[in-house]
Amino acid sequence: MRIIALLFIFCFISKQSGAQNNPFVLGMTIGGAEINENQLPGVLNEHYQYPTEEEIVYYYQKGFRLITIPFKWERLQKSLGGELDYAEMGEIRKLVSLAAKRNMQVILCMNNAGRYRKYGVEYIVGSSAVSRQDFADCWNKIANAFAGYDNIYGYNIMAEPHDMQAFDWQTSAQWAINSIRMADKRSRIIISGNNYAAPETWYDYSDQLKYLNDPQDKLVYNAHCYFDYDYTGKYLFSYDQNQAWDSTGIQRAKPFAQWLKQHNKKGMIGQFGVPDNDPRWLNIMDKFLQYLKSENIAAIYSSSGKRLSGNIVSSYPLAGIERPQIKTLQSYVSGSVIAQQPLPQVKTETQIKTETQIDKPTEKPVSADPPSFYLFLPGTILLPEPNGGLYKPVLKPTTREKATREAKYRNP
Image (cartoon, rainbow, N blue to C red; front, top):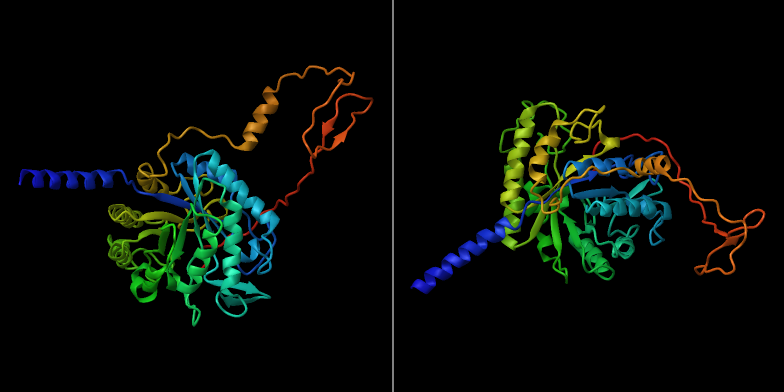
C-alpha cells in the first residue's frame, strides 16, 4: 500500500510539474500584406505592404516572441501552379530573417477564406477552377522555400474557410498537409476550422477535422474568437449595446476547448481582439486569456501593426500613443513559452547604418601598385580600378518600390 501511495504522489507531482513547464504561448499578428482584397493581386507597396523592421522591433521590445505574417495567395502565386512571386517571397524571407535575429518565431498564414480570385471572380478551393492540387502545390512550394528556417513556428494553411459548399474543407486540408510534409517535416501545420473558424460552432462545422492525419503529429487546430454581438470583431456598437459580460470570451471558446480535450488535440485561438474605447473589454480579454492558459491553448492577437493602427482592436501605437490592450497582453506574454529571453533595446538596420557611418574610421590609403596574385570566389565579376589598383567585385543591384497604402480592418 505504501508503494502504491508513493507512486500516486509521484504521478501527481509529475503532472503538476509538467503543467508548470508548459507555459502559455501568446503571439501577435502583424498585418499589412493581406489588406485591400479588392485589389488582387494589386501592386506591392501601393495597395498593400509587408510589415517593417520597426514593427517587429516594437513587439519584440514588448515581450512577444511569436508573430503571424498574413498574406494573400493571389499575390504570392499570381498564376495557379506557377512559381512563387520573387518580390513577395523576398519580402517574407526578409521578415523571417529579421525575426530570427531576435529569437522570434513566425507563422505564415494564407488569408484567403478557402478561395482564390481569378479575373475578379472568387472560386472555392476544390472546384474545377481552383483544384485541391493547386492548393497543395502552393503550400509545397512555400514549405520548400522555408523548410531551412529554424524559426518557422508553423504554416497556417488557410484563415477562416467558410461556405465551402460541396468542396469539403477536410479533404482540401489533407491535401495541403501531405504536400507540406513532402518538403518540411519539422514545422507545425495549423488547421483553421470551417465556418470562419468559429469556436462556438466547432462541433457543427469542424468536427470532421479530427480525422486529419499528419505523419509528424504536429497539427494545431485554430479557432477565431471575438466578443462583440455579431461575432465579427468589428465592434460596431458600444460595450453595453454588444451585451457583453465578463465571461463572454470563455463561453464562446468552451466548445472548441472541449473538442480539443475530447480528441486529445493541440489548439490555438489564432485571432482575438478587443476595442480600445472601454476598459470593460480589457477585463473580458483578461479572463479569456486566463481561461486559455488554464486549458493550454495558445493565442495570437488580431491584426495589428503600423498600417492597421487606426483599427479599433489594433495593439500598435496610434499617433505615438500606446494602446490600452498592450498592457493586458504583456502581463501574459512575459510567461510565454516563446518569450523567455531578456528584452534588450534592439536597433533597426537604419539606426545601425547611421551609427556605422558616424563612427567609421578613416580608411588607410591603398597602394596604387597592383598585388602580385589574386584569390577570387567562383562567379566573381572583376573590373579594374581607374588608373590601375585593386579589382572589385560588382554586385547586381536590386530595387524596391516604396509608397504608402490604405489599410482596412480584418479580412474574412
